[in-house]
Length: 390
Image 1: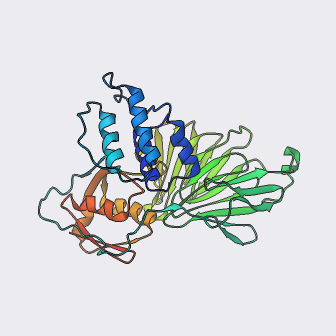
Image 2: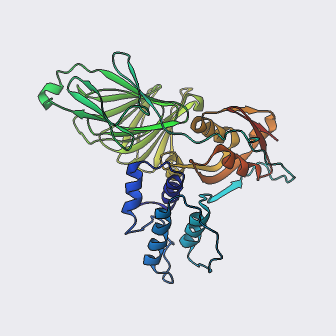
Image 3: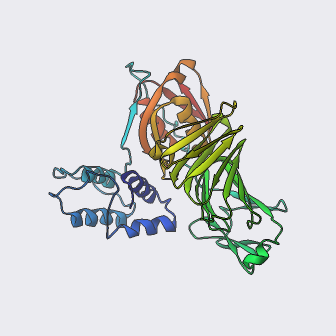
């Protein structure tokens, strides 16, 4: 099952030529069964086979220029979105100005003055081995990257790093001396790794994870900076622990996201499936699916609340989703993904809030131009610096 937002983002990524082989296979899987996890998309007046045929025809057409033709009226809401997307290759669903600033006035769109556009990020990371040597993963060839104490490290064709235990029995694993590796994504990068126990980790931009090449002992401990999503392999005997700042997140097997960026001054754990236990500054809480725990760095304990799963997981699903978010928080995400620095020329502009959904695979000008249309800001780009003004 795939959500509406995930399909639109994946399609946009396909049309921009940035789909990995695995993502192309995912689109292929939906050629024969186009089901989307969103109620209210079905319409008895429209044949589903017709929907699938027309969508896949455009997918096969790839990036060819498609002339815009006058189309007949389509009542189905999904078909309206899909038709617009397929003809114009736009993934804008909405991008509306928030609550803080409702002033109107003429604002000039500021493009990049003909200079090379700042493009979105992609699969970029480097692996630091226990001996200090580094491997740039986006430059490394597919296949075996390294071998460490019976563990083979390979890069797949879809740009994923996989740790596989080779030649070690379960009894011998306990005798192996851990060799700690670190995967680091720069600004403008993201990466996926499968650890030796089968746990899957997605790293967001400007993040890192430190882990042993094979887990030994009573715990499966990893250290995180930045943000990552985990699908932990189940093992009731050996709990999986994420250490980030002064907070520990312990699980046996579950799906969850941890946001521990230093500039957020709080660590947020969001649980999608299973259960996790958070502990920080002598406070311990247990999260249930759909909840998030926020551990503030000032030692105020852990606050538990309902999570906005869609917004939390947007980065992994190829989207930006803002829910009336302050512009400074918006631009933090923009800065990490596009590898730019942000400068504010007017302090008043920092009070603005924005809401909306947009593909992460747009060029930065396209995102910023829509923000300009809210008539509350304009911008200028100088090199890799984005200047925000009234």
